[in-house]
Amino acid sequence: MPTRSFRWRGFGVDITVPSRPGVASQLGQPGSLRFAERLPVLAPRLRDARAAVAFRDVAHEEGEHQAQLRGVTGDDELSKRIREISWYHTIELPNGVVTPGQFNHRALVARYGLPHDLAGKRALDVATFDGFWAFELERRGAQVTAIDLDDPRDWDFPDAVRPLVSAARADESIGRGFALAHEALGSSVQRLVRSVYDLDPTEVGTFDFVHAGDLLVHLRDPLRALQSIRSVTKGALLLSDGIDLDARQGKFGPTMQYLGGWDDVVWWVPSLEALAQLLIDAGFRDLRLNAVYNLAKTYETDGFWRASVTALV
Image 1 (cartoon, one colour):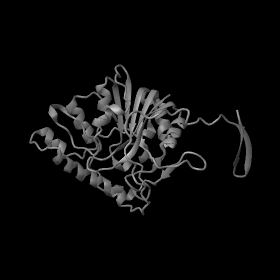
Image 2 (cartoon, rainbow, N blue to C red):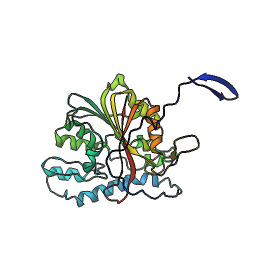
Image 3 (spheres, rainbow, N blue to C red):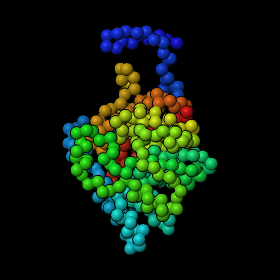
Image 4 (cartoon, one colour):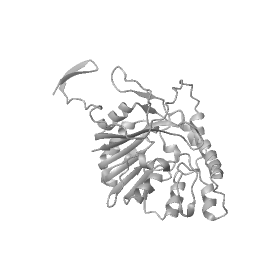
């Protein structure tokens, strides 16, 4: 193995290290999903602390607006309860009822690389929110555990924003949509209030299949989160997350944009190569790129570029 010289606070030491795992040899080719037209690169703009928490109110208002657009206007008890919740996921419930949602993944499920049959498997859905993916994993036969945080004040907000978050309305539990859909579907998914950082195999066990979607961009420490996920994964991770398609290779390797968490709690946006390197450095191997796609909110025309990657242990 090669010998590299490291210096720390004026002291030098020669140590033997393994070669860095390369991304190119471990990242498969994209599937058949058609690439959409690239989004323009937006110039950085000054951040307003209050704008960093305003998205919560926007989500609530748009959730109500989408409820009206989707016709969830009945007088039955289920319709009334749906209208009381700000929905993140569009979820099909029994009797033709469809919840509103900021994101509608239903038409794209086949593109994500989910195993068709998960019968007898333990599965984990990380950052489940309203539970769309947890219920989909259950529908495919898995015994599913889902984790998320109920209080937005527990998210990775920048320190300067936290006082504003604490002062903002905090009566909208993230788990309300999940609870309603869980009840309506007669689901057996077990939901735990837990941060991805706190995943521990001695407490939750290990899983044959793990799903995590649109999570890393919202975390201050995405590598630490992936290491936690890796600690409970004994089979495969399906990760779908935001990427910067226009990122170029930096002087020292793959690049990531640092946004600081000020806008929609978005901290980092990696290039595809940087996302792959994060997975490799967290301990995953044999990466396969399922798709690169653009998914917009239901009330917008353009969205974040995302990559769906399957990573094996």
